[in-house]
Amino acid sequence: MNEQVIVRSVIHATSLRIGQIVGGHGGSWATTDWFPILVKSSIALGVLPGATGGVSWLREEEVASAILETAFAKEAPPPALNIVNPRSAPWAEIIAFVRRAILKRKALAEEDLPIVPFGEWFVLLERKAEKATEDDLAKIPAIKLLEFFRALARGDETIRSMGIDTTEAAGMTNFSITKAQGVSETMANMRAIGEVEADAWVGYWVGKGAF
Image 1 (tube, rainbow, N blue to C red):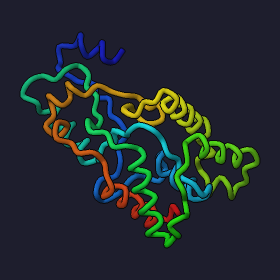
Image 2 (image 1 turned 90 degrees about the vertical axis):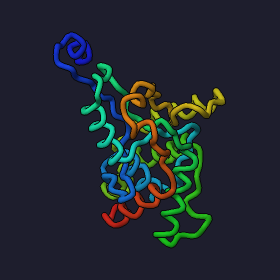
Image 3 (image 1 turned 120 degrees about the vertical axis):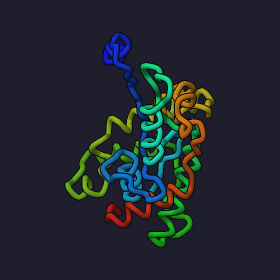
Image 4 (image 1 turned 135 degrees about the vertical axis):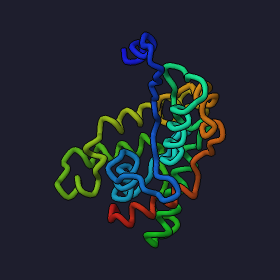
């Protein structure tokens, strides 16, 4: 509806659909967001969830640049643009980088915190949710987002059964970004999220006392 109003308006305007924003090199990713909650809960569960597919996450500074470039584009941009990272990073790599950073900062053994299929991780979460105490809720905040993580586990199961590894992980939405790349130089040249960012996130979360 909003996009239809924009199309009919004499004022040039663009609706931006912005994907998952993460902490950049400074690592400042709010501990109340779903992925930090997943990581904190995984430490209490003793395992991290693996998934097939990738993540098209955006560094916060790149989102700001893309918005400014769209706002000050020489030609009026399309009525709607999707702002997601055009270079997806495999979930398997990102979760492995996060694990490595946790082992280093928490001085854990190399065999600690193994990565298991998302479905197995969710089974452990669901069991904890059945008779969750206040202490459980504090250590495993993913219990409060049980249905959200159930959907991700089901999405990953579907993707695995189809043998697809080129889509967004855990059934998360894919977006077309061709138009946005034409408007924003930042979008066109964006790099995939990697180990530098994952290490910074964990450092930030540890510094905030999340785990």
